[in-house]
Length: 212
Image (tube, rainbow, N blue to C red; front, side, top):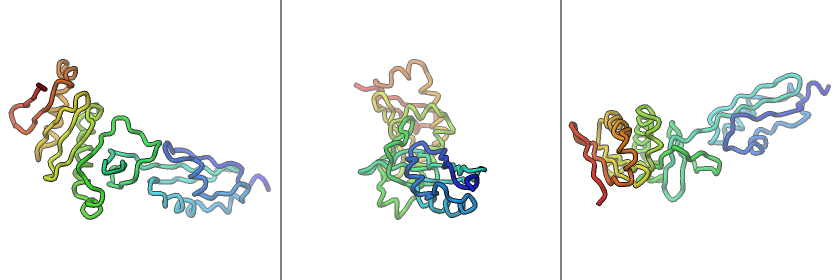
């Protein structure tokens, strides 16, 4: 009877993936018998899309199929000819048009081809970005770029003037905390465009260099 056939399909959880694309991949047919809807098969089809991290499917009587999508969320964007989103697990995918850019840093200095052979620098960039989140979420909004040098030392560039922040080789968590506290000072935050560099590699002081 009609009560036991698919009458509606509801997609939720997607912010940048197109709903019509998800429906096409799921291949759930309207008026298909509800008992014939194979949730495991639909899940496997959808997970072939690398932008989808997780799927939850429910058959809701009398006639609704609900598909909840968990999209991969970018932790930062990697710049290497193209723009790639990188999530917290290290998955690299080309940026899609609808992906958010606000408050997410750009990471430069890494080659996608080299990372396919050795992902160590990528995971170092992920770890550094997570530390920034842990220290101060607001600090991310002041960072325009994280550059990974060939010696793997990170350099941070700030917004409003591009001040170069030297973090050094180690103690990044403590140094990020110092940077966060330093930038919270009222005179500093309003003078970023006049600062060319901040050196955090000294144990007892912060060196700030002004633009000439």
